[in-house]
Image (tube, rainbow, N blue to C red; front, side, top):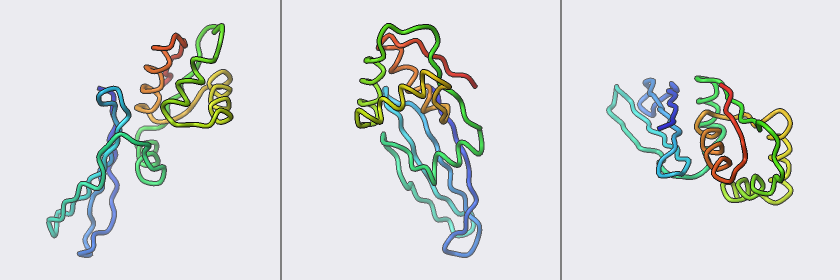
Length: 137
C-alpha cells in the first residue's frame, strides 16, 4: 500500500498543544485521506475525516508535501494518442475537458507534481489505459 503520514502541532481548546495526524493512501483502487486530532492533556480524540475524496490543500496536501516533499509523474516514451490520459483525468478528478487537456499537457512536458499517493494513484490509472508513465521521487 502506498501512503504517507504527517503530524502537525496545533493548539487544543484546553490550551495545550495537540497533534493532527493526516494520512493519504490508496485503498480499494481509490485515493483516500484521513485526519485525526488528539490532545494528550485533556484526552480529546477526533476522527476529523476518512474517505475517498480530494484532500484539502491547506490541511493534508501541504502537510504531506512539507514532511515528505513532492514527486513527479511523467510520461515515458511516445504515445500514439493522449485520449486515454484525458479520460483518466476526467474520471479521477471530474475535470472539465479544458482542465484535463491542461493536465495532459503538463504530463507531456515537465510532468505533474504532487504527493506520492496522488502520483502513484494516477500512475496506476494511466498505465491501465496504456499510457506509459513513471513516478520520479
